[in-house]
Image (tube, rainbow, N blue to C red; front, side, top):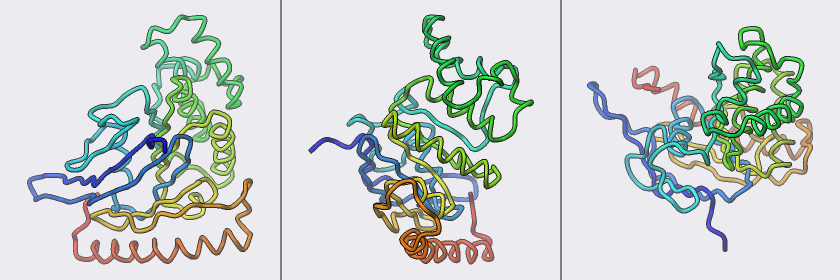
Amino acid sequence: MAEPQIRIAHAGKVFTSAGGDVEALRDINMDIPAGQFVCLLGPSGCGKSTLLNAVAGFSLASSGQVLVDGKPVTDTGPDRGMVFQEYALFPWMTVAQNIGFGLQIRKTPAATIKQTVEGLLETLRLTEFKDRFPKDLSGGMRQRVAIARILALDSPIMLMDEPFGALDALTRRSLQDELLKIQAALKKTVLFVTHSIEESIYLADRIIALSYRPGTVKLDIAVDLPRPRDASSAEFNALKRQLSEVVMHEQQRHQEAEVRGLTVD
C-alpha cells in the first residue's frame, strides 16, 4: 500500500503568550493520499488554519509529526503551494509578473517562464488582464492570479486557506468549478480550509470536521457523490444535515466560550 502524501500523526499545537498557553490542536491524525481533495471544515477557532500552516511549514506542530512524502515538515518548501484568502499579490507587479515571480526566483529560463505564464493566463481566463495591476482587478480576478501563481510552480500539493470566503456567491461558484477542473486535470493534492458546509460538499473527495479548541478530528467522511454535484439533490442535503449537526454543535461551544471571554483566534 502506497505511503500517504501527507501524514499527520498525533499532532498538537500550543501557542504560548503572556496571558498563558492556548492549546489549538490536540492529537490530530490523518493520512491524505496523492491526488485527493480534502476539506478541513469547522467554525472559527477550531484550528483549521493552524493545521494548514503546520503542513505548509509556517508554524510547526508542538507535538507529534507532520510528514510530506515521508519526510518531517521543518520549513516551507516548493512541494507545497499556499493560496490565502487575502490574495497576497505584489501590488507593484502586473498579473503576468505576479504569476511568473516564483519561476524567476528559481532562475527558470525566460522562455519557459513566458510559455508557462501564457498557458496559465489562458487556463484561468486572465489573458486580457495580463498587464493590469492587482488594484485594477476584482476579488475574483485577484484570486485567479493567486491560484495561477501557485500552479506556475507546479507544486504537487495545494494548500488553500478559505480562498473564496470573501467572494460573492456567483464568483465563488465559478472559481470552485475552475479549481475542480484544474485539480482533475493536474491530479494535485488539495487541502482546503472552509467554514462553509455547502462548499466542502461541493468540492471535496473527503471532509474532515474539527472540534472547537482544542481542535480534534470530530468527523472524517468520504464524499461519494458524482460530479458535477447538485446542491439541491436529496443526497447532497442529507450529507449537509449530517455535517450541520456536527458543526453547529461546535459553533455553539465557540459562542459559549466567547460569552465567557475565552476565545483566542
